[in-house]
Length: 520
Image 1: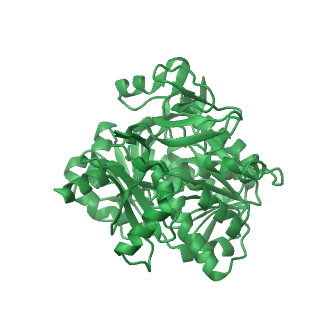
Image 2: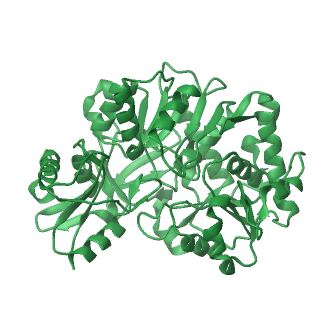
Image 3: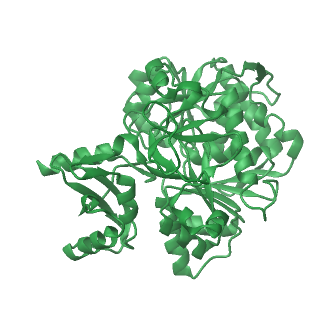
């Protein structure tokens, strides 16, 4: 089946006209302005020789231009590849070479990194967005000046790529996942259903909503929540994600009347600390999507912000909150706080299976598998990886372990490859990390098993706390509740944890190597 390239946002100008669409650094574009900017972006890239079907790398912090690039690439049939800002430039260069990119659009703040690797980027058009573009790159204004306001009409096979979304790199080298026209429509549809059924007290997402992106657009907040709000005529607000500032976030929530937000738990905790210190803020949040939270953090969120949250779960290859726990579901049964909820829409299936792909009964731990139109795709030029990613009948394997209860609520245990085998049983780092995070001094933590058999919890402290033997013992004591003897960790205080996505995920493999090196 063929579809119009960029169809999801093709009518935003005519539908919503002069309504506010996109706010960044105090300036707001209307939907008509955004629509024209997308047309100029797509046609401008084509005008400088980036033809339909070409792969275009995008390396940038949040900005209005990034949104223009996303929409414009889709309309012009260009395959965007997201480059996560937390990776080293060498990783980006390797990925761009592997996917045969013909252009790289980069934030001018990455100019030095790009310049250092220009020899390996030979043949690619280098395009700089933002202030002070380097002399050796084409400025974004030059690109858009060659573009046209006119609509782009391009037919695309629904099985063709729209963009490539690399995995986050927590389990090794990032792998580019192909998002097709069909799977992209399914992702947006899944997220719309998820948002529209957030609460029986809320109307569907619409023009009265304001979606704030403070985390990286190039990761989950953009992947999941940029398009659903745009296609419904809601206003999008962007904050620069190069550094996280809880004070600026709290002020923006109030000033912009934000109704929707996605935050990973490591960013939510300092926000709650700040709001509590202020004695509360006058906010309008009614849809807060949280990832990687503990039950204690969810309870605290209700106390500070109200029952405005859901706890989401998913993977890069799905592109949406695949399961989600609503605060209203916890009101019915508090035990559900330990779960990541159930399917976020009727278009998505989840099951627990054994190593052969056979279903396991409720309560039994096994491999989490999922099935929907969102994951009907493949990894770019990785046929063996793609083949191993599926069981029969299109069941996708995110490489996570968990179990379902009798009501279909999913309980996440850990990444399949991160489990630690000991003589006394298996240790799942996720469970230990959740226990350690109960202590008020802990900002973030990564748990790994060392070659000597020791289970170590590497703890990054919140500002104001100082490492001491007494504090480490306190953290170990606070984290011991609910853990078995073989799961109890040795707490080690570290200055910084190796993380991706602004601290959202700890790179356990990198952490393990660093700790092993210290032990030598």
